[in-house]
Image (cartoon, rainbow, N blue to C red):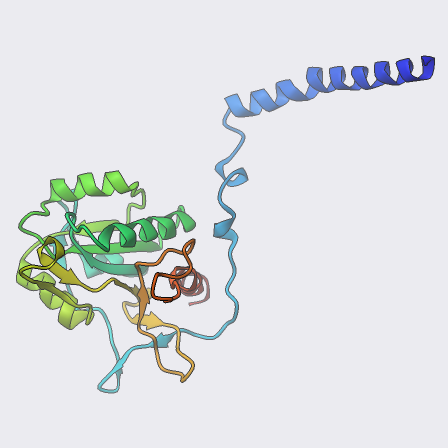
Length: 248
């Protein structure tokens, strides 16, 4: 019994010393902001690519397709052009703020991707509204805030309707149209385009060696599959973004 008592006393003494010496140091680190974000940051940013195969280019008439020039106003009422994305890897989507169907899913997935690459000045997102008559800069600013947009290179852009539709349908071949009777009054692609630092559209290839061109933006990484059995592309997209950021 006495041995047991002594052991309890010894353990109690060690705990007391730990509390006196170590705990105040931890508290002091927290108060002085010495506990950095990286200690609690998502491990997703430590992801690696599965292979070193270069991403494919979209070839049109024998030439790699680059993003056509554009210039629109963003949610902060600043003019943003393709030149603002020079030297950055970025994603492109077409959406509208009152979309009742796929847009919320797309932008939640984009926020997930944004949060996977924090503090990267060479990564951005370009979101173009296909309903510019309603989606003014102030509307887009509120929309961005509601979704938790923090990346300074994520621009929600509005402008001349004809120019936006030309950019979508001709510049990116991402379908967008105003359709009477459609949910919300518009139809558009639920895909994302991936652009490299030189402004070229890039993607991985399929089993036949052809570029997949675009990435499905509607199915989340957590869902893995939609109701029709289609698999998600977000995990592949994250990996391909990292490949362009780190290897090219």
